[in-house]
Image (tube, rainbow, N blue to C red; front, side, top):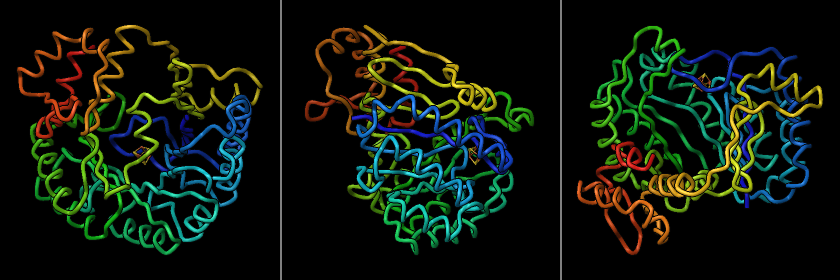
Length: 363
Ligand code: SF4
């Protein structure tokens, strides 16, 4: 059964490293976007009732006003039915735009899980990233979420940041695990063209990020979290079901600018251009696509393999995939990057950080 992703393309300000489809917007622009989203959702009425998970991401979905949040969730429910009936519904938030009222509204609406952006516990680092919320804001928002009754919270962190030390990263994890969110994700900084970081000449630090990755994974495991994907750690039973569906090559529908879908074997993504998205949807036209492709043969098998290998548990290799990639798999086993366990093939845990070297073999 498919997952539903909804992209909210608004942020109060752009972070220095961000290349997601998001930008500041006025109240009127946000209202028009929600109208456009309702029209896009109406095109998929045929899928209503078939979704099991929801993920509202962005951008900063919590930037919406209470009235806009209600409108958004009513649009979503035309496809999902009552949110409380879903297996999981995640809503992304940033501390600077989340308050008690919004936390209560989301809980009451049936949202089951919140993903809250932290990135680092050191305010100097957060300022360097261009983040608006400092660690004290995160703490306040986190408490508001708990007070509203949320029992499933993810926090995002970053490693390999300019000026960040391994100790900083370990301190961030210690600070966070003391709070005890059910789920933690962390990502190494990537410097993308067109971002303020790229313009300022900020460089990625892969060796340092690798040290942090190793230290971070060990610290989280010691604190009772289990790593189940390259960047994701969860307390028992708290793995993100919506994301697991991606890694299992399950179907999903994406709504909003830049949102990707995988339906009936076809992969496609909406235009990332917010103005164009809103204009075409309001005109009743098809949303322009950034790409559309149907994976077949070797490409489809490669994708299945790469997605499955993202999971720490690995992937059961059907004969057709094994035969197609026999040589590549042989090389990776010989290099000590892959191992077999209980009928599954997986990347060795201490090699997960170099997973890109594994994936390169299949493209
Ligand atoms: S809050 Fe997230 S989506 Fe918004 S600018 Fe920062 S990194 Fe990008």
